[in-house]
Amino acid sequence: MAPFDGDLQDYRELLLAGSRNGKRADTGTEGTPSLPPKSRRAQRRRAAAQRRALAPLRRALETAERMVEELTARKAELDGVMAAPDLYDDGGKKAIALRRELQEVTRDLAEAEARWLQLQEQWETAQAA
Image 1 (cartoon, helix red, strand yellow):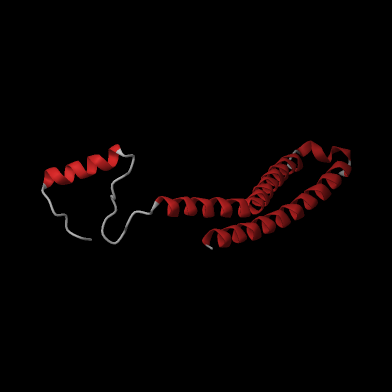
Image 2 (image 1 turned 90 degrees about the horizontal axis):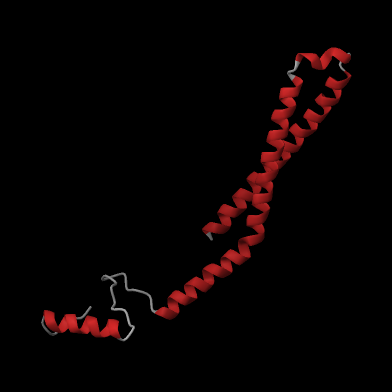
């Protein structure tokens, strides 16, 4: 960075003249220059392109998360019903049907959680790239 030849008044006028013309003064510090407008624009475009590219993965991740939440809620509901003492009044027929459904929901939940974890890892890898 070159030293400024002039006094404080000259420097102030230089800054004010730049702001009047719609230009920003370079406020970057040594070693971290501010980006020119084209670079910032290109950086924003790259970020938008990355968001667009990752949108299907993000939607799949959100869908998997909703599925895990729904199955977890259904499993909790079935656990509550299975704990009711009057469930076995009909000889256990209703309990057998509910037990089968609970097994299916538990299996589906394990699969949904595995899918969610897989998508989460893909998301984190894609974000890091």
